[in-house]
Length: 462
Image (cartoon, rainbow, N blue to C red; front, side):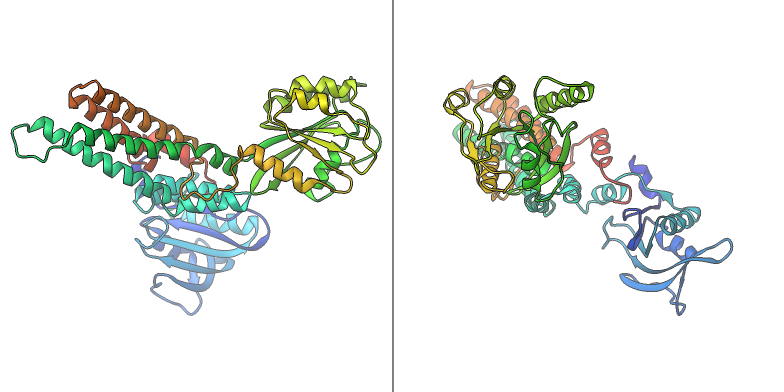
């Protein structure tokens, strides 16, 4: 979407289609009020509509004056709106036909259908929010746990932007001093020593390193973890899934091979969205259906971030168990020793030697015993021992991480140039690269195709 499109008035349904209490149609642009006036008939004949007040009335088809629905309408005059443009929101009864009929009436009277994320993109282009805050809107909508919601809100409130701007300001001040010294060597300009330059560069690079190192934790809370439950048939994989979900999601029977396909659910484990997959038992296949199920298990296992390997503690380790070991050795793995409510016959010493870093957690999936300990082991392993997400600024977006790394590398080059006693012109070039990288995080130097890719992730109407 080009900036030339900002002159258009756009409209879209901003609530999910379906039956519900209310639905919302949003209109934004210079003709928002005029278009609303063509389709809205206020009760009591209120005219003109005042900003930021709700009005009760009816949406009509202008061509024949028939009523579509009784609604509440609010007109919001720019700049105190989401897009910093004139905005009208129509709250109607939620139903697919009602919403579509009202939207069509609005479109027929001069609006065009908004592109995905176009309302938020206009908020960005009109200076209401920066690009990090726009991206935080996506994270808010897709949050699956309290922690991911909290991280998104921190970014939406501008904490990441403030940190980036502070580093940018320091580098820009340094760049100004260096360029003045290079361009006007005869003038009485405050001089800066190489030692001070080095100190400033190192301080900012250290801050970039600290920020960049938060990415793995932030990514976990934002995107979650793919965890696969594996084991031979009838060890209690489906029972474990049900225990973690606290509901009877998977069919559990005493017949080996009951699970033939991958069952996938999202579960909140200590604030981490865990994409949990119960898989077919790994053993020599009995038929074509089981063969396909085992193939899918191998596929999911190859892609998993975490493996929960379920063993039957009431039996000795079998050849089927041993065949699984090579497939999980290179993964982050937790051993869930199931059926600890029964007499234990399993010998684990050999496995502990083979998997020295893997936690072994005794559980009873049937009676939900030891599940809390298993959840804590998952959290500890996923976060590499970190216990919370209390840092004020945590990266969770790969685009931000790459920009931080680019800025850090540019400063490392500047430090190297300073150590080699090169002309300060080389240092100013590196500083400009660092500033451009940091500016791309805020959207100040991000190219149009990058902006398009970001806002295409939104739904239409946001």
